Length: 401
Image (tube, rainbow, N blue to C red; front, side):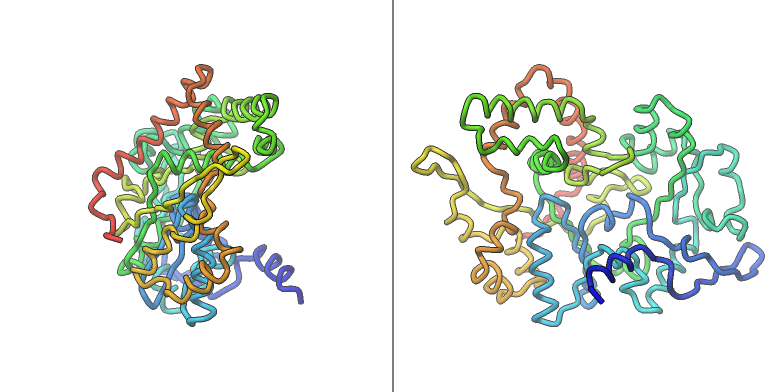
């Protein structure tokens, strides 16, 4: 059978697996339905941002978009295929812990998750928050903390002032469909056994640089993609088309949608803040053990036609964040030799995929001086400043790599 078809079909069914038995408040055992065991919620950092787990190292490595996760996937796959390593990417079927944990570890995970009100369910019924969550009457709420979705004070305490719940309500003028929305939030994996004794690493890029790079990437998607005008941007007409196309997208896209999310449809995960949502008052910056500084050290030069582009010599001299992963023992030097050196015609585009073409940087720079977008950029700055505030109290976590 075609592996592509098999994997496609497999991803539609997540509910097969071992039975999980819990006890209600009276000690009577019952089985939790498989759909209740789904690992959901944008508070699970490993689901929002590309994350890799090595069980033999007891390491969690999270690589937010725009910090080199594209190339890291190639390197970690090489480590598994050639060096018999054990890296797992939390994606597709491996989004669900039951697909990569052994039975004992999976049982420990679920026991910890359901031993107390670790999960948070946001519900539409104000009086429903007082219901008994340690019975089998409503398995969806079993052993969960229940929060009324209009309890703004409590929601902001748990998830931060800027969150997907209250912002969506304000944006939609408290429409009935939004106020009737219920959501489930699961803890980050590293806050639960058996992952509590793992060491977690977060790759961190300057927040505004990451936001701007992510913003350019998000414009790649959809019919309004302005970068179709890149090739003619050297002409007056081409530049006008490029500039106005970018401006139109920015003007009609809410900064909160880019940085927080919360509405239906595609999510702008290349620009999502790492400082939101909080999990019970703590950000990713607070919860992760160590930070790895993102760097690419790429330079530009002008060719004989006057066009500015990436200096290809600089592509060869640096491997970006890969150097740090080699120093940490996550990637071997032979992987760098095999991919960065021998496969450079394939790899440079991935290793340095976050290096934005100069023409796009230029138009974004000019748009920041556009008076029609002054308030838009000011709000973006205000939201991204959350990142800098989170970093202030966690700077000691940067590894010396």
